[in-house]
Image (cartoon, rainbow, N blue to C red; front, side, top):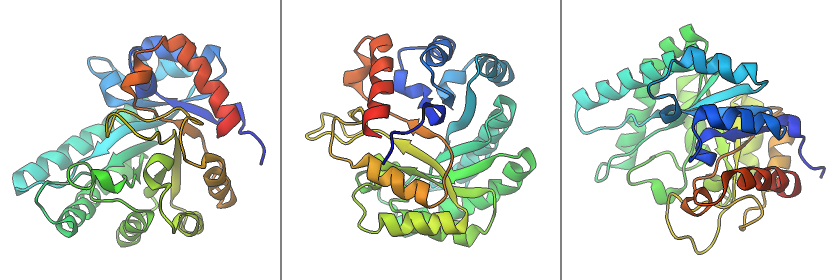
Length: 274
């Protein structure tokens, strides 16, 4: 299989966390990166319209805004707060010029996963009219089961597919992150189904290192771990996906390194291992 095209390389702003958005954008552009997914904290205190213009002026495509979600809660009042926050997220995405929001759907420790999934589906349904009116698509991202207690009750592609089927909207899809789904024995079949159903909305890459030092913030650069990223990319492309390959790495270890050098390592790993 051929190396991926640099024209499809996107980096999440969180990947180079020590840099502000206004530091990261020109540096990404200078090494040939073509897309960026903006994390909401990078926009805090900034005008999203101005940020969007700055990004486009540097020749980068805005791939998505990350993240919405966290719909489940123990009380109706808190669930309404989550819905309102997701509407604000949609407004930010529209102002920024992002066509997609990635949803980390949420979970409540001690609440049944079935109940959390019901609340997630209801929460997405509640904000869908707002998303459609804004022209912003919502991508459900299944998270690895180790996050099922508190970060997401959506842990497999099949569960995300069931939600897409229930919601039955062209404004809902699935974000495939290899870190979260590489272990799934049904992954190839589910990617094919997502392609057939038109719900394959985003593709994220990094690597799984073992042993890891932190459950959340010790992801690896592509090629450092055990994920067969290239094979999964092949499945995604065979299913008809033509969007960006998005590098999304949370790593205390890598954030402590020189970010200019790290950016060059990302580019090389992307070409060699993705």
